[in-house]
Length: 240
Image 1 (cartoon, rainbow, N blue to C red):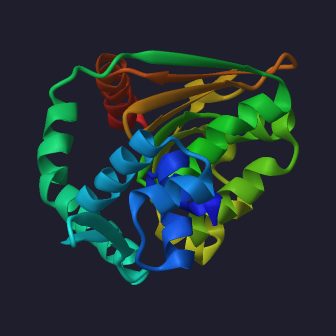
Image 2 (image 1 turned 180 degrees about the horizontal axis):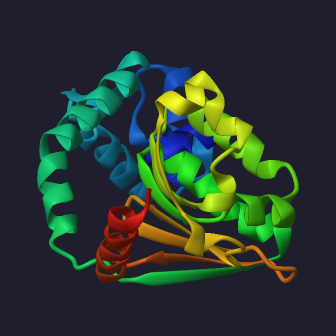
């Protein structure tokens, strides 16, 4: 119980006072102090804080302050109230965050597992993406993972617009009806034997090598994404 109440936002003294008051029922600050071992002045202040939080109530009888716990369900009501208050100001909070220019970032990966991070990141983005490069070269570098990637992409309904190497034209994977429906392809012989493949997705550019030394980059930069889209459009315009 203590852990949950701490997560709710109560201090250690508040938890002790609250749980003790639940057990004793109506009680004075002196009585709670005796049971918990907390100083009397501290106990009184703690109980007053719990009153302001709406967890306990207080009244005066014969010149003495008495305290009594509200129903424990009050904790749930307070959480709902806090959630509703936050939800009301959430749009304003998000608009404030958007005013801060997003910093460009570059992530570097080495080895097969590291490079696969790019493919998984594309799947997590769940948006249509652009690609130019050689799937055949990627297959040689990453064994069978690209097939799994294409199938996972199709299962998620993620569309692809790609300029592939001419050597990829007869790749049977693109004859799969589910994959074909989600793929818009053109081919360019100049991309045959490409040693790097480029993915443009969301606000990122992923570059993955296809040589013996596997390396990958994820660049998050609006200006680089914009430039890469221009390069893709140029390749698309000359591809067949």
